Amino acid sequence: MDITGAITLAAVIVSARITPLPRSFCDPMPEVIVTDNTGKETTIFSYYPDEISFTEVELVGLTLDEARKLKFTKDRAYLQS
Image (spheres, rainbow, N blue to C red):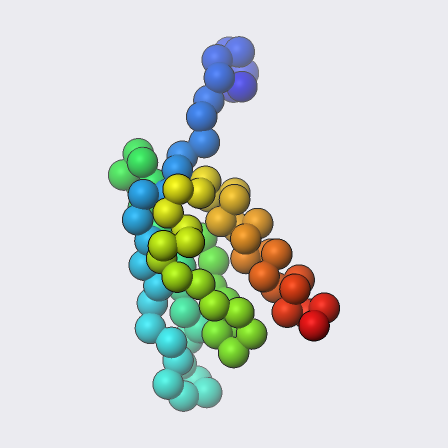
C-alpha cells in the first residue's frame, strides 16, 4: 500500500538480458538487466560467474525483489557448499 492507502503492485520482469561473461581477469562481471511490465529497464545485480549462474528464463515473471532474493539464495548456497 502507498501512503494514500491504495494497493501498489510490484513491477514484474517481462524480459531479461545478461551481459557477456568476462574473458580476462580485468573484464567486468556480468550484469543482469531486466525490463519490467511498466517498460522500465533496470540493472538489478552483477555476479561472479565462477560461483553462480543465471538464465534469462528464470528471471521472467519475478518481481525485482524476487530476482534479487534469487541471487541471494544462490550466493548463500554457494558459500555454504
